[in-house]
Image (cartoon, rainbow, N blue to C red; front, side):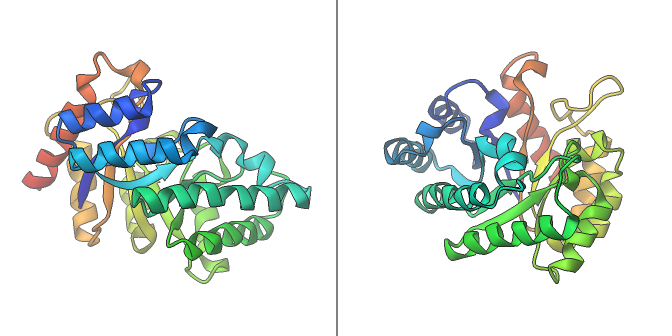
Length: 261
């Protein structure tokens, strides 16, 4: 497995500043969360790439700021808007080709979406196939507030698309949806290509990863048994951190938990 951190964990620090900090802390790999339109400009992409290369950071994945608009743009009843949204994703995929990132994190439609499940699956397939043209894997994340938060929905999606589905597993989102993380991994292991990981307490569903965390150890052990070889990036919320250093301590604790399993 490859362990890293999402730049989103230090939002709203500027992305290039986060990458410089990652390099300073010898973070081996990361996910870049694009926060705004200008960050897709070639000048910014080259800057991100240069910092990553000089810091020895592999960029595994990207997360689009337009995830908030996916219900409106991609799962709309207005076909021209859908077509425009598909075209827009070429900017992401071109940027990813420069960065060397292979996985595009996708949220999808909200639970209250107007389209049928089959229409959802077909629209996802259009974006999936566009990604393939760029060598990119478009991966559906299990987001609690979205239709993808339901394992039943994901199971239907996999069946409808004949197994041609990649998943991002977020254990925080599973907690929020009342889904057992171990059960999720066992059910969807062949389709999981990327992981967002965090710890929790009785009072908070997203916390820095504690040393020798039992739940993190159990999850990593299950992933090992299932033969998972992809990335696992720490994804936290900065407003819940006592200090920025907790992000890097989380990565250290994650690696140690994997090594002792």
